Image (cartoon, rainbow, N blue to C red; front, side, top):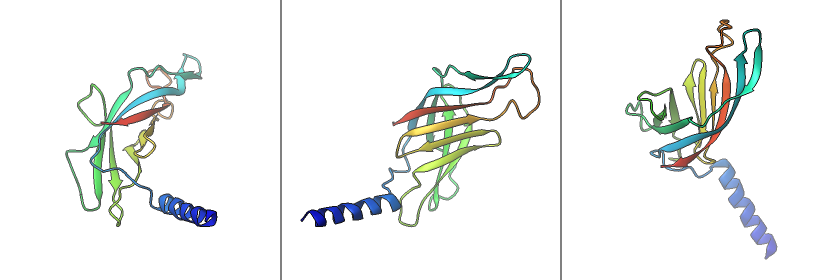
Length: 150
């Protein structure tokens, strides 16, 4: 009897790993940063620094524009208080009807990775250092945080 239970549990685990349950694609997430670290120009050199992220809150929501609803769904990452998307996303739909659990959003220099299953995110701001203007006006960083379903 124990062997049958272990076998059934193993099959369930394998099914979950290869086809994890994914929430409805229409969901909106509110994401709040917990911590951020990066680099800041101090006038002479780039120094590692932790940033205050108390005002970093984002909505990850279905976009007004939808390319191909049969294949997936467009999302936007909007910082609360802004009226524009800082990072567009594409959430692929699998042939079995489930949606990808994790998406990468953004473009050149800005990245936002969100996992709809674990409700965690990473926000990467990559401008600043690579542009060569060592003036302290642009500081690259990475922030991490958690999301809740709205």
